[in-house]
Length: 161
Image (cartoon, rainbow, N blue to C red):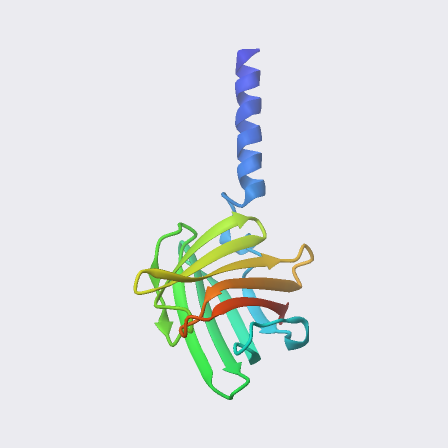
């Protein structure tokens, strides 16, 4: 009887870890893919509006590579990327990110990730990225401060391409 209870407890623990995304294989990661920002469904803090944005997230050994291309309302653009794991450790950002020079990624659950950007060790923004249950939409909520020290609260809605 004790053995059955122990086996049942192990099965429940493994099932809970899989449901939370802790044991999720990258091939099952709903964040993966190419995403185009739906400007009409997105909202931005004053002075941080986008004209267009594309986000590509691809699986790499032990984590993901995230590449972003953005064009702002004033015509300026940014291209940056980072390769990271879901371990919450700072990793370098390559390119001209508006939020900083490192990023740390953690998985909240099977459909949600948290990204913390830092500029020279100081947190600038936190992003929560949630993929819809049908996998067609990704909503990224960004809060913090921009390089000019102004508050940022953006809700960027992306459509899977």
